[in-house]
Length: 384
Image (cartoon, rainbow, N blue to C red; front, side, top):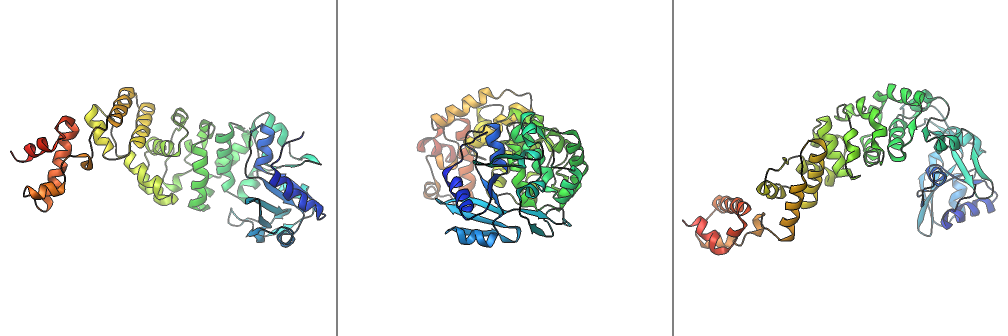
């Protein structure tokens, strides 16, 4: 089995081998090449070269994780994680190994990895090294741990999220014992940092096969992060867009989105836009749509309409058509769209809070009747 590997990866492996060391592609990129993904990314390299030696072999390196044997090598400005073969010590915090031991062969290194489909090594000269049935599991589209699942999940609880994230992304089924073990240890996710939880959740939510992760949500895996148990099957009918699916998850679970965003330490972009989307109500007429556009941008209002039509028995096709017309014809709905402004009101004798109140009144009237949006008509409305 031969694969086409990017030139910068070939160069990295070649330099290590020329120096007298072993080097293999490992992890997700190998899995994706076997699956047939056109352009796998994030190539990682495993080697028996010590990390300090790796840093001397390559002119451009970053010591990203020396204590764990990882050096980021830059070739043609492209980063490659190069990690020395290792086995891990105990995991008292259910996340990080208490110690690592560098070893001399790829076989021992592969034994510490999470899932069989990720425990495959590849080199253009030596071919594939598959010690744990990863090729067969890829063929049958099955996710299972390397060796005992209880041990794997006790070592690193984040592997539980990775399991369901891979199920969502790849559409693989989860082997029974692996799933039972993962679900029995959901409480240990509480020990994982919010940032890591959110990083995995983002990838899980936009997976093409999100229904494959249903058991994760149904069993309340994210209760420590204020997302109650729920049925997420409707998410598969929504676009694979993080903001859309995150908002839908908040609705399905009945979660407080702002509290969840604070807890998971999400970016401000997601927190602010999801808050606005979740303030909206299903529109009954064009006026409702324009009122909604005063809360969020048109693209997010479209997201909201997708969510409504998916989670509720509501037809929103008419609303999408009306929204398109509003945007196409530049129909007014914001205060800045008014043909009269604060300076005009001051000239008319308005002062203080009355200026803002009057502009909001005019905004409401123009939303109901766009034809009123001329300076003359607006003056008439407030000088009767």
